[in-house]
Length: 249
Ligand code: PGA
Image (cartoon, rainbow, N blue to C red; front, side):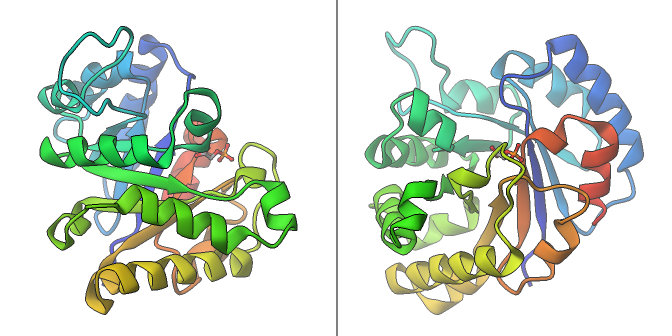
């Protein structure tokens, strides 16, 4: 049985003060939700304070990227070892905005993933096609290349620490959601790729989140799909009411 996982990706929103005010409210509103994993991913600057505020709660904390080295001359970067010491649980890797604006390639995401795992953190690995790729009928090709590139050299034993997020780029922040059926089709395809690369059991246990304009209005239909195990939520995770409603789907 795969435990649903709902994660809020705050991107470059919320100052440290706003982040703490938000999670104080969230903690109280969601304190009874024990049958699902809840994760919030503030900016790196707020992560440690958010961890402190959520310490005895049922909400975990993620960050939005982490480096492939643990330390070094990499101005502006933060390593998984540093996030680990700060009490962070999850690291989002390969988000399409980082692929687009910050040179995250599959090879780089793979190196980051290995270092995240070496530091005993969990990863949310994002994949997804652009609109032109979908229109050209290349969705499966693109997703297969991304999954294979990101999972290169990852062992079966590490799979339990990894969540995959399928986020069609054309649905992110656009208000356009993939239909639940469209999303599920790609989720099932990804599960098949994992079965090929690892085995059927591993694939059956892997959690695959959908991301891209998830809202209180569509979460139920998405979660009703056989291969959708959660959501990675951007815009709607920034408001208490909408994020709470999504978590409580
Ligand atoms: P969105 O973003 O929910 O605002 O579409 C999702 C994401 O980028 O993870």
